[in-house]
Length: 293
Length: 247
Image (cartoon, rainbow over the protein chains, first blue to last red):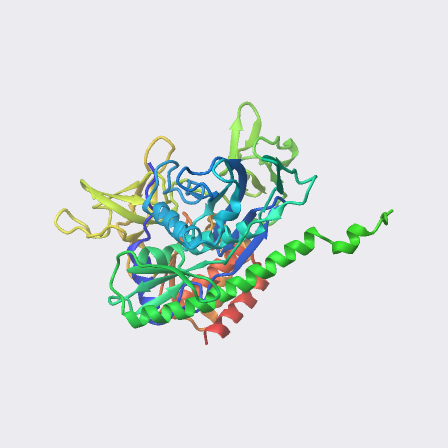
């Protein structure tokens, strides 16, 4: 049976002592993220995010299905997270741990409830047919801060995804293959990002961004702020733990806005790079009838 | 790597050329870790790695960088105490593997009345006494011959870092710079940092010092040497850069 690998007493005491002297084990600043890398797959809708040693893969797929009975004008949008033994030997398949439940809830509140994806645009025939968009989040390696990495991966994958083009003629729905018509992007309203703060010390006076796994085991409290680059907050979750000063929380949200803007710029840059890579030469290259011999 | 050896990289099950096997008039051939003898005369590697041959001692073995630590006799390891059972401590050598046992009396100067009190999660520096694949490993914190600790025992304070098994082995070599290619700890000491270390063959290094800054520096140097697979020249540059950053 897998056991949570606990850090030793020496490690726990040292991490707290070092934080008291403003030192982090990897030499980062208290509000500095680990190097963030994002790669897209060849297929549309696959995003691979690496945050230090934490790795998350998000994959988006869509199929035509029947909408919910109580919402005939909306499509179906689900996010499925799975933490398996690949992420860490402490996780088992099929038995959700607390980490997994919290991750699923935070992603739900951040991306689904905030209306980042316009579900009305997924409706094809009212009450009969709609798109069901499903995001599968696979955590490949767990070294702390799964929430921020997973949320970033989900948003990146959804913005990268293209669904097949459709048309309706006299009640008949036609779904075109990618060869017949170019797939179309999803109707995206805003990009929310999660920023997780960890608190240390007896009163929670030391605050850190992007805790590694070892730091997560020692923290006394944590707070996740989800917001987009316009400063619109989707949710703030502080689930138990040591009480923290309200002023500190306000400062955290202010810094979280800066980080959300950085994430947004980074994601826009990567999407533009990917679009350029797929569409070399652009429109003129498609129209030209030159052969490269 | 010992001098005047032929070394090549092999995969498990590869056939080893008979001409590579050293011959000696008097000493029998000694096979080290990673090699298996299949009678009558076949020698087969069991892991992927570098085959090293030492003709003077008439021995051959494999150098490999494995993932999981397998206890071997007379290894020095850093274990984490999980819990205490009757007269025993159950000590964890590697994550998610069976525990090793450490008798509560196997410490220097321990009698039935005065035992060391180790809490759950404490670290100990111990030697492996018994290790085979059919039984749990057994440890001791005192040299059986002399009855003295000789550096073994509980480790207090400081910080434990995880390193790869290959780096741990090279740090423990007697001539770590020439044979192992690691000089990072000596270089850090030469820069004026005061610290002490205990290297466990199971991939953990304990660093103790009065100043947490020093410990963090040593930890970062070890991690970057390990992950970057730096050679001695690059380690020198790394140490200079880290010391400059910290000051």
